[in-house]
Image (cartoon, rainbow, N blue to C red; front, side, top):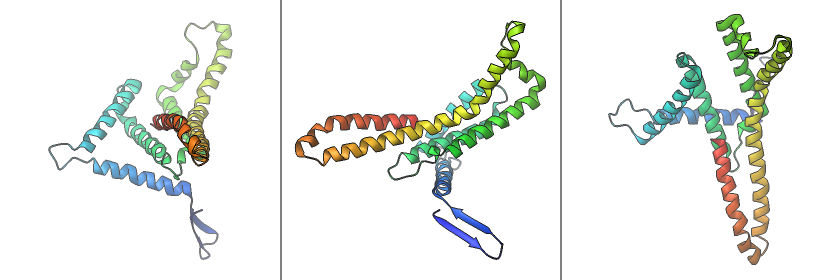
Length: 218
């Protein structure tokens, strides 16, 4: 841990701040700071930051509205906040010598499982037994219903794991690839003058991979 605090007066009470906790706080302050910066309440002419964040808001709103429908206002704050948290986390993780919290399986799987359980409980409370009708394919022969229900149920439950693993694996694999290639290119650049100029070609490909990693982060 980076910082630790223990108190003998309160028994075994101990507080520690790890890299994960520190960068989570940093990302929280960045997200809040960016939205404060884009605040346009006291000006008639919107700033560039305000237009930028309004564009993102409209994009997220249209996606949520198309997927959820008329009740999208209830879920929009959660989805919008989650979108920005993951976006800033990925972008901060791309900065050299920074820690990417989305490479932590605890975070990604924790978010995916909690959100999955929350939405499932909400769906059951709203639709009652009609919710389980989604596991029965339309027009399915009656003898195949038990088997197909098990398959659909397994496919549905696997989303809680697959969504978290997908984010974790994409960011981790990208960072590992960049680390390996950067070390290799550094050794090539420092070997000799001739190899230095020959390495400029793969270095251009390396820059393309960096842009690809930024695209994956977004």
